Length: 471
Image 1 (tube, rainbow, N blue to C red):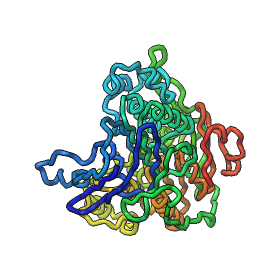
Image 2 (image 1 turned 90 degrees about the horizontal axis):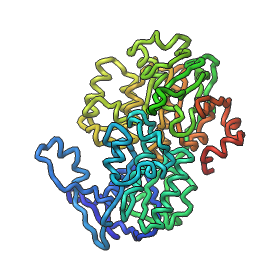
Image 3 (image 1 turned 60 degrees about the horizontal axis):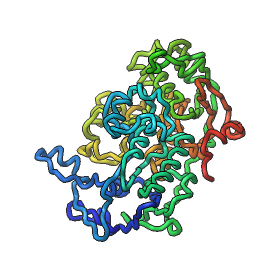
Image 4 (image 1 turned 135 degrees about the horizontal axis):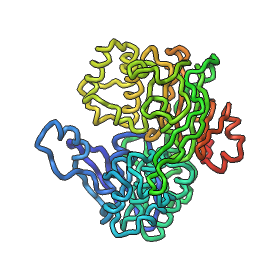
């Protein structure tokens, strides 16, 4: 298959040749770019959009997806199943049962859930109660349960724990054996897809593809965090915190998600929260940001009980990036965001915004890349008084360059902010290459505390439970 995609008479993708066949699995790697993000949608038959909108303002938002596609050789697959990097885009209903009933209809819902190791109790779960990883597992289970000649996946791996990644490998192998063509677009470097029939990489030049043995990636210098000083005062403390969640089962009302959790994050310290999908990692962040309240125990910020902080004071002290940053964006364009920061005299954030997001005031938020969206959410939530930064899965959707920019921002903040602490919730163990954190491993409602990454990786249970990063 050879294709060209034009936008306003400009070749955005120029004669890309993808020799896709049934009964094959292809891995396509590349840097975060609009061109790279367009290709999965084109293969899935979602792009270009066929209808033009009469309202110019709305049409401007989708112009990128309304270009001209020229299939020079071959053809697109007749039926496709697609999962993109944001699982919420694929879930339309309020409960898992409704979702399965609509999307896979006649199939046994238990067998669909089982594709990604989700048990029968999920049938009664509400979608909003699922973690990001659980939403991705559900989206993938639905995609692989549909009859399709091709399954196109884009940026799904960072959401998945070790078990989820192994279920993904199994689903890909099964689909391939059943004559489907599976194409995975992925930034993350991982060795679990060694069984791919062919691996392609995006070249530095726009839209060109090359077999893996001709890969050409730009090597960027990694920021160093070795000179950070450690003052041993707690910024955030969890003291015997318990949180109960609804089980959505008829015979039980609540179950323990977090049980008697105690740990501290110190000034000038980085702490990683790790664990399987649904272990309570994002819940812990939401407890720290007062989105949720614990059933028992005490959470302290700068030595004071969290309940003493009103929302304004909390936002001035704590910067929070959620799993889904699009939910945090309140403005229509960059200029509106800058105007707000100027109105509240936040010169600190404005200076960082000018450095890291050199975009015009009219630039619409809807066109921000994943990296730009995350930078905007972090920077606009900062002030000179920020003492705690919480990042929930900050590297999902980022390529190596985007991760480097994020790390550079954190390095800059280590010099600009006095005695701040960093709490990172992540499945991306590659971050251990750049930081030396304390580690809190949430497992079965409890917390295992490790004082260093060396102590964490020395635990034999870690190798069995996590995909260890590639050197």
